Image (cartoon, rainbow, N blue to C red; front, side, top):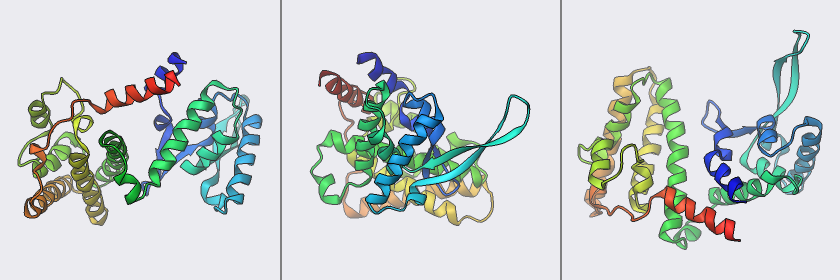
Length: 276
């Protein structure tokens, strides 16, 4: 079980997740098929059909969760053919793994992953308040990862090429002139250690606000201008900082760095699963 867990940690279901032009996440059925250990489409299609029935029973729109798309391939004779495929929502993936063959090694991991991640997407404010600080950190760290994927996609569309400069602009605004490297040094992190992995829930919350508000403003930016997009990121970070100051909140750079990184917390969770 340990080897499977290590493999899962290195290549999770997040690695095969896609984002469409609107920033909506989806998984391709044929990629998920391989990840779950299926080799024949006909067998996996039966699982998808069962999942569709479950989706319908739960009164969700099947076509919204299982978008029927074709994928062009070149056959052995050099002829272009269209094969069946689906763009799956997170909920669709959850239903698929629940209906999949439990004897396959990756199914259990898939069931755990999509059950937990689907649940995370549905946390209410009351439920969030009951989480421990470590659980809040894990939850918000996932939000920053998903948010940054969308933010960088939009930034690229708006003409951003130098993403280090773009990223540091947001940090400079929020952290009173500090770059990502400055923050890392202040926190005493090792080379290339992710600063977001070493933030508490409050600090992550401020960065989530920075990410989402920059994303919203860039969506409104009509022309492709790296200078304007980078300036917007800085202004958003600074505005959030000023708001925190007015509210009497602790400034981001004064918030404590947790003893354990997100990676360490995730390893502990995996060990707990292994013991169980």
